[in-house]
Image 1 (tube, rainbow, N blue to C red):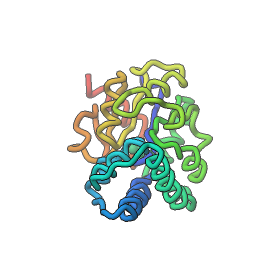
Image 2 (cartoon, rainbow, N blue to C red; image 1 turned 90 degrees about the horizontal axis):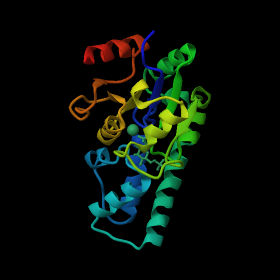
Image 3 (cartoon, rainbow, N blue to C red; image 1 turned 180 degrees about the horizontal axis):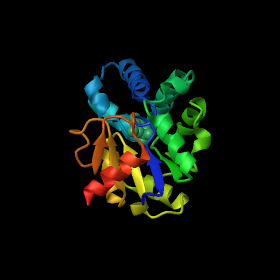
Length: 221
Ligand code: B16
Ligand code: MG
């Protein structure tokens, strides 16, 4: 039996690929305001809160608005985003995610979500995996954004574990940074060059098992 007792998962980019829906909605907002954004610029929005994403989008268009207007713009983007994810089902789970969650569940080890999204419950329910989580920490519960470690520290606390007893799966640079700052073992999911600060990186969760994770951890020492 390995030493890891808790598994904390980021949502967007690790369990589901919602980045394309975020991109389309932010792009629609930018277009409405008279400019366009690129897929490359969208990369900078991964793991970033809605409010901070809006600031970034507005800076790309050299636009500024009073706070009241910004709230409306963020709500408008979210309404488009929510409409686009309304048809999500388990076919949109990323490869290997369900299998790994099931294996962890079967061992009785802890599982927490650690996401910036305020739509996480909706996504977990529509993809049928809500019940697999012991704790759900997301943007509705946090006051700090990644790279601040708050979201993962709250996850560990909810599982009644210390950070060094948990691994964090993250697809964003800032998320990996947050995990490292919080004292977690960070597992990057995606591009090893982008996620170069992670303890180790898997291209995706396909074939990712507890044994593989524990082996990688023992290689770190
Ligand atoms: P919402 P994660 C993040 O989720 C997304 O990567 C990011 O693009 C999004 O802006 C953020 O959630 C907030 O999402 O607008 O739904 O509250 O990667 O931390 O799971
Ligand atoms: Mg993410």
